[in-house]
Each structure stands twice: as structure tokens, then as C-alpha cells.
Image 1 (cartoon, rainbow, N blue to C red):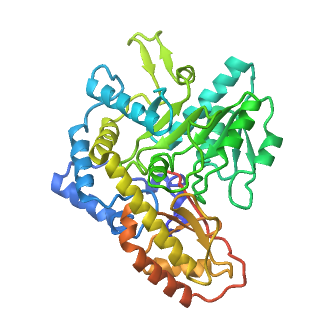
Image 2: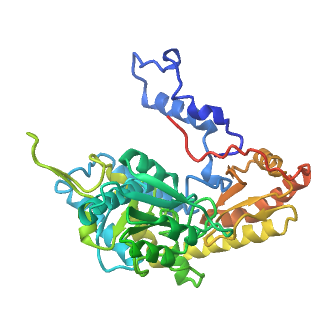
Length: 433
């Protein structure tokens, strides 16, 4: 959640009365008037281009790249990927994206698909595991097991798909407690989840141990790399320490990874990859009893907008290996600058040392709320979590690191020392519309 946002507004649309609803316009407006109205509505929106925001948009800091994606979006704005046979260009791009994801994630099997985002990829992984447990193992009521730090989309998927969800605590380092996992997984477990990394702390779970525990019980093992999947391969290539996390780990059966994060394309494009084609077949839906003809889909979506597909393909081809390596170095350097700067401020500490430049920091003396307010006044849009302030760094943040640390030091200096109780930060990741 952005500092300064009133949390009571998040539910306002769900509780809106009929009297508050907008009125359908009687007369149309000119394009100029519509654009002017939209510009006025955007005044309070997050300004991610400034480098002072740390969520929702992964800013490559590259005007040429952004302009290319805008042109691609316009080129494909009316195409519909519902029927790829009608748009062979989109089919080619989808197949290319899956093949490139397979290469990045350490498998020769191009078994997977693209989706609208991490939530849909996670839904698909849970659905495939549920049906695999039922059809291959005879488990009528399979169980999903995740750490408490796993993305809320897993809880959402379990709710929508009617799957029992068991939670496992994390250890002192913020990673899934594998001893607790071993005590939780049993013959009903259909899917065990590891995060690479988890969003709150940026730490990668012990994937080899988690996958081994899952395999011991016949369960599938999903690695949620929605956040790190399109950054970790490049981090490894530039010499950063990256724990094992992908299909090179025995027992990992599926991976979700969002291209619209560190792949530097616009929303929404994610990849969901499987170790075998047999698993991806469980994701497919076929229906031939409709007068309109055969209906077949590879994901939950029917109509699918073409711009995210073309945008992801364009982003990858524009940057290439060299471009992604350069962006990875910028992210790494930004992370070092922010971490070193925060470490140099006595009253602050990073909650858990992270594996990528995504992390939480807090003030043990209980002054984190006042510090957050101080940074808000200085124009920095930090996210409040339940335990502290959250940073997600992109290449563009390298240019503002010094200014951020200077303003943070001033905000800490002016914040009164608390009583050690961090208080309620009202951390909010998503809202209701």
C-alpha cells in the first residue's frame, strides 16, 4: 500500500450506494475533452516514472524501451488471441515466449503457456495439481501446502477451487520452515509451494528440500517465481549467489514467472511452465457440445488481449541477453546502494537479508510509522507491510539511491523514538472494486 493512502477507501466501491454511482452520459464528448478528463483524473495516481515509487510497476528506466512497447500496444490493440489460428502472428509469439521461458528455467520441455498474470498462473498450477491428485493418485480432496509468506493468490485459488489450504511457518531467516513442512505434508497433499522469492522479504525458500519432501509423498511441487523468475537467471549469469530454484532441481514440477515484472513489459503477461506435457494437458479445456463449434482453451481466459503477448515478445527481442544482463547489473547495483545506505542509519534494520533487491526494513525502536510519514511528505511512495516498509527495486532506482538515503536519514532524524512497539501499519497489498 502507498503511504498516505486511506485504507478505508479500499472497500468504498464494494459498499457504494446507488446514489453514489456514476451516471451514464447522455451525450458523447470530443476526443480532446475525454483525454482532458482522463488527465485530470490521473493527478492523484502513482507517479512511477519519477523513481520515487517501489511497487506495481517495474521501471526499466529506458525511454526507448517504453516507446517501443507503446507502439506495439497500438499495433495489436484490436487483435483477440481467443482463436490463435486466426492470428498466426500471436500463436508464433506465444510459442516463442514459452520456449524462451523453458530455456531460462532450465528445461528442454516446452510444456507450458502464458497467462494474464501471476494470479492466473498460480490458479492454473493449483488446478493442475488438484486434478493430478484426483486422477493419478486417487486423492479426492487434495491439500495445498504453502508457507505463510506465499502469495495470497494461493489462498485465493484454494478458496475458488475448493481446495484445503494448510499453512507452514517460516524460520528466523524468513524462509519456509522445512521441518514444519515435513510434519505437515501427508498422503493427501496435492501441491507443495516454494517461493523464489517471497514478496514480503525477497528470500528464496529451500527449494531442493521442499521438492524432496513433496516427491516423497507423491505430491507435485510448484515454485512461485512470479517475482524473481525473469531476474534470477540473469543474476546467476552476472555472478550473484542464487540458490537452486528452477527445473534443474529434481522434484520441481511447475514454475510461475511474470514477464511483466523483471521482463520489463507492460501488464499483464505471466508464464506457467511444467516439467512434462502430461501436466500441461490437465490445464486445457475442451468442449464440443456447443452449437457455436468446438471451444478449446489452454488457460482460464477466453478472450485474451493481444498487446501483452506482443509486448512481451517485443521486450525480449529488444533487450536480448545483453540487455537483460545490463538491467540485472543495474538492479544489483541499486540494491547494494539502498541496502548499504539503510545499514548506515543506526535506527533502521532490514528485516531479512534478501536474495534479490526486494526487501523490508523497520525501526526496532517503534518509530517506523513516523519515518514512513516523513518519507511520504518528501514525496517517496513506500509500501507499508505488516512489519515495516517495503522496497522493490528496478533499474531506474539506481539514479535516485543517494537522494533516497539522504531523505530517509532526515526522516529518521526527525522521527521521535518510540517505545519499541511498531504499531499497526495497515499494510495492504490489494483492494476491492
